[in-house]
Image (cartoon, rainbow, N blue to C red; front, side, top):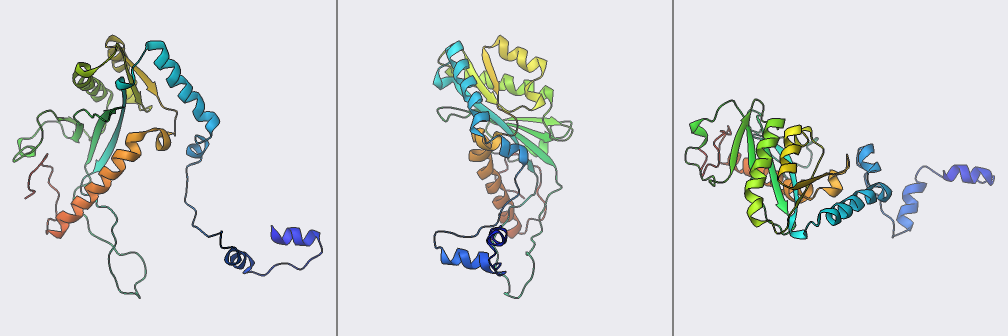
Length: 260
């Protein structure tokens, strides 16, 4: 760009280090690495696209007379068993490439569905593990609270059936503390959250659902960044700690007090 402007003025072109020297001369500037970013997510950060969503929320709240105390947000996330988090280690200064750290586990998938309201009150988590039946050894020496729900699917992923089970779980734990006539449930567009049975249950129990715009969870979904991000990081650190204690395999015991 600089050489093009100079060429229009019949001036000499700049040297190969002109850009870096320009930054050095201006202390208010710095250089940073860029990061890959999904194009659709970038588009959804346009205020003109987000504003209609907030207007929809405002209009829905006004239409049904929903109290702020009855705003609920729910989301789901997945954990790969035995997956550690990145960590800083000390190596020799002449080493090339990133150091590696072995991780345990058989890569089974576990899904967690969680809901929290505008007052910061969470209902007990709904956890989905891979399997056809509940095995007794999952619960041996378990410190798992009695109101936590453990359910199973073939691969540990959410299904339409589990979505219905979760909304029933939501009704059970939020109905007693509902202040008004309706509850507002804000969620993403996952298929399991919009099955006919799911929507019918919500209608029968005066639960108003609103789906966030596609590709916008990174800015509109508070559970995604504020809760699940730190939770996954803490889980990875816990696995790393078990490795340091010479545990080479992560058993699927649910809520174990002391992994053996």
